[in-house]
Picture 1 (tube, rainbow, N blue to C red):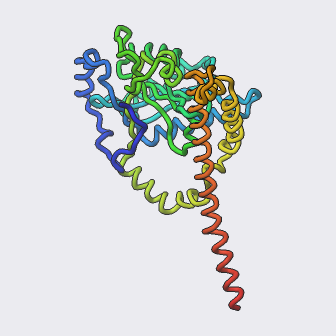
Picture 2 (tube, rainbow, N blue to C red):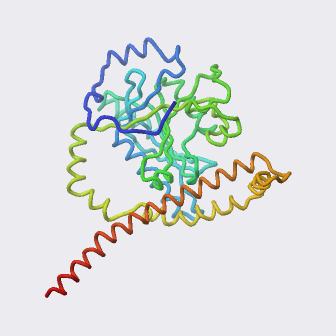
Picture 3 (spheres, helix red, strand yellow):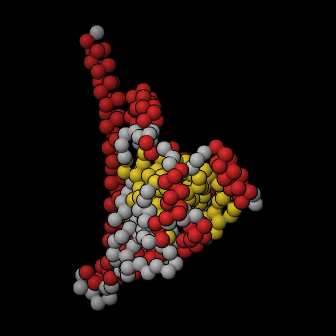
Length: 347
């Protein structure tokens, strides 16, 4: 079963080695033709993850500043290699492509730009393009927003047929901001002739069709999810350790997730949305059934559970954030002021 990303070893350099003979052998043997889930893991460099998340958040801010205040979807390419059954992502390169939930707009020079990037990459590195990424800045709900839409699956099919190692990453920037950690999913499509098990989601879990469509989209049975983890080089890990000791701890102590501008602006909208969902007619029918009424249905029960979970997550986020702020105020303001007052009294 696929899981949310985790850290690997603190620093590793072996993963950067490029074995051209092994790559050529893989292309000749084509092991993915005998196993539709041959590629089952994805190792993402912290640099690539940071660039994807930063690009996605820029799309959110640009959309919020526009007239319709709708976050903008962004897209980019992934640079890496296939390493056995693992896809390794070293870098992420943004593309001049923008869109919203219902449409995508690509600049006129996108294809030329991609060709230019490919030529430059071929001249400078052994690795090549192994996939693409795009964002789903839809909303913060009880379920993550990383999934493959019908359009996404069509795009992935086209590239995966031409390049068998092609992999898709979907970033959920709003949830990443709310949870203060990268929220993303890594996906690949099944071959067109493959019939996956009935009522099985991309993560390998079973469920009813309606629930699977709501979580993973209407084409949930045409793609699967890869487990992913993050890595960095030993030198990068040393730099991060130095920065954490000398600088980053100051930001950790002086800031809180609830004080981030995007979180402050979105908090009221999330509360209103949760309130509206609690008062919906489907929810009322579900409550009626639980109380013995004749008009209840399973949809109402599901809506009640989702609304309760949404309110619970929002409450936990706010409580943790404010507890953090109160604790910092107590340590850095109240106690310091109290000590100063005591010293003045002694004098």
